Length: 76
Image 1 (spheres, one colour):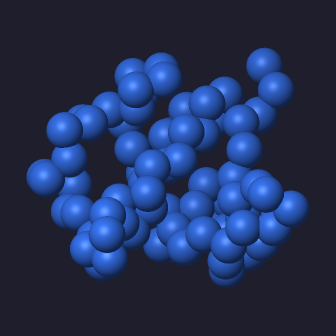
Image 2 (tube, helix red, strand yellow):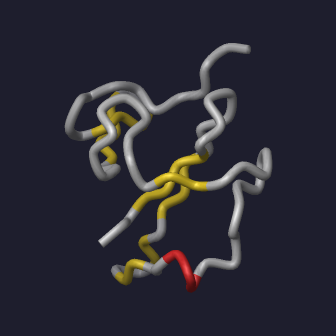
Image 3 (spheres, one colour):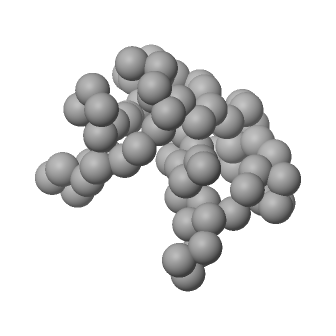
């Protein structure tokens, strides 16, 4: 089941944690159909390895647990 969503906009990459009190919300349960920062759609996969998104926090920054890339916005 999807636990994190990330904005598809490479200049944004807003990260949304769907877990709430030990319960994971499904996308239809979300009130946010699009990224609140830029209005782009969500993705449930890593933009680098295209695997289902699982987050690992390193140095207070989110990284993909599988390919270990930082999940951050690209400089414009």
